[in-house]
Image (cartoon, rainbow, N blue to C red; front, side, top):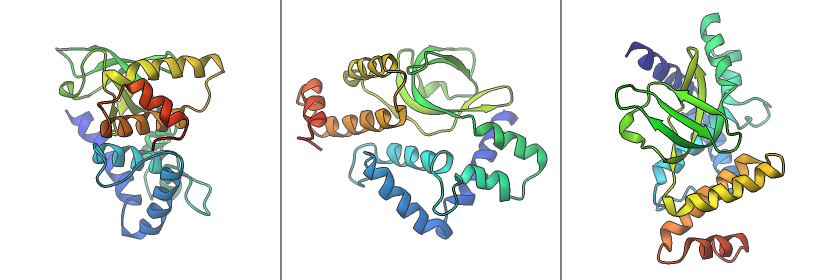
Length: 218
């Protein structure tokens, strides 16, 4: 699929421009901020690669570079030496949607899936996804990027086990009642809960969550 390759090339160029030795100090600072905000990046953590992907996704699309006031994506649009046509495509990426999504439909005959944003309740059809990744009912933290009149996943995913989904639904419902809240902070909490629970999965998930909320477990 030429379109799929094209999308991947856009993503790879953007990442390559800011995930390299030149930005080693910036990435180190970003990791410290990510951890301070509740993210875990310990090498021994189960699902380490998954969390690392989520970190770099945040670093590229959301975190403002030190002393710049712009995200890597914004700097790339401004200074990346790209064509006007490419700027239009990268500018669309600024309207990305980072959230927890429920897979509503995984089409067997096509390479797209239907998802619902748990925070906004908006529904999206996502193109060119790997069917092998998704099943109906899956809950996944991901980022949607507008591309070629549709949406694509950025490629960073955090899949949640069924055990955690009940807590996620309750917490997101609570946040919606309060007017949305900070979905990024809540997603970081869910990720942390998944990591902690993977270490003490013989305990009831609600107990683990309660202890985490009280700061008695980390």
